[in-house]
Image (cartoon, rainbow over all chains, first blue to last red; front, side):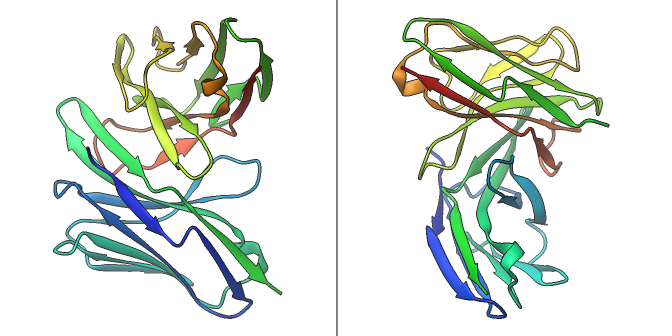
Length: 114
Length: 114
């Protein structure tokens, strides 16, 4: 079945460094790719998303890139801060009759050391 | 707006017991869903609904029932709890049933089955 692979599972960086999280999806019909941040004890929250007709999107320190040919998409966080420490999930969404299906990656735990 | 509200936050069940996790949203969202989150496995879809009176199965529906009698409410029922259902459960909603709409998550319900 469809799946989304996410790497790495854990990432530790120094404050101010960049962090990159990579995902690969299997369903070529996927057309929407959101990224979620989950803080301890909370539900996931959307931080950025990209649609299949766009190759790159940036929002302040966060950017996402999409390579549809290779079925890869990545999250880039620049100038990391301690408050960026959280679990990040990528997801790939596919439309179908009557709704949509979103498959999540397994998550990346990001530690930003002050 | 309260967003997506889940109750209870924590619950301990004995094997074989039944219970209902409540979920309500006040954003007039069409699409509602339930996910479970297990370590190293990301978020997996249990059941979803694209409107009142309409429900469908997700990736891991066995052992769970849902109903959607109103737009606002989407309860998840565990019929006969098993230790394998120990997990964190998230209710979520989205404005429309189509791909590309932000998914809003509740705060989560921590369930332990002993």
